[in-house]
Image (tube, rainbow, N blue to C red; front, side, top):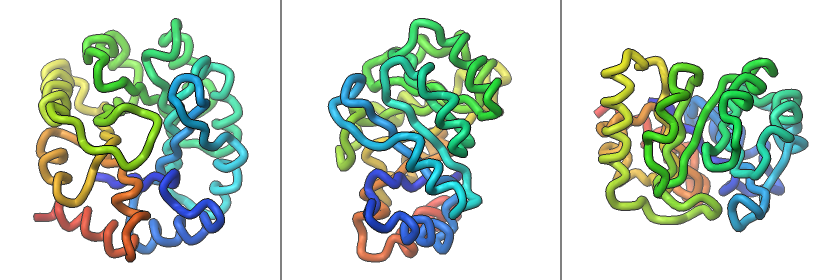
Length: 218
């Protein structure tokens, strides 16, 4: 299991501290939520922030694009230093072309889908990508609760990957993940947990990150 703290919930006036906390806590990845106020009802950050983070961390920068026309931003995020670039299946009419574009920029590819989008929508592309990001809240806002039925959805995807010899594809889960439900999500089949307010909204983010990893060890 890998933890990917979301900097969307960190103090934007002091992102260096957030990166330091992730390092000291042992988080594997840094999750970057990109929203355009069109695909989702919120506006967040762009490539310049990723570029500013890159010199200060060796950890995987995991960019989640919740945007319309994601094709227009791929090269900018790749040049800024993204390691993974994830797009939403609902946001493009040419998933194959977008996958090829992300790969051509030297990044690993993720596909995400909203809670109400059928898993079957992404099945045709699983052999071409590195990661599936399952949203367990409606994308657009941090701090939401974990949607009922999400763990069953994760388990269904895990079973499909195993049955079709696609175990190399990581399952990332984002939305409402807390210390109290992390074990359930891991047991359902998650490889990467995204946690925003559950990490940076606590008094001691370093110890909280460590606590997530202790859940896996137990």
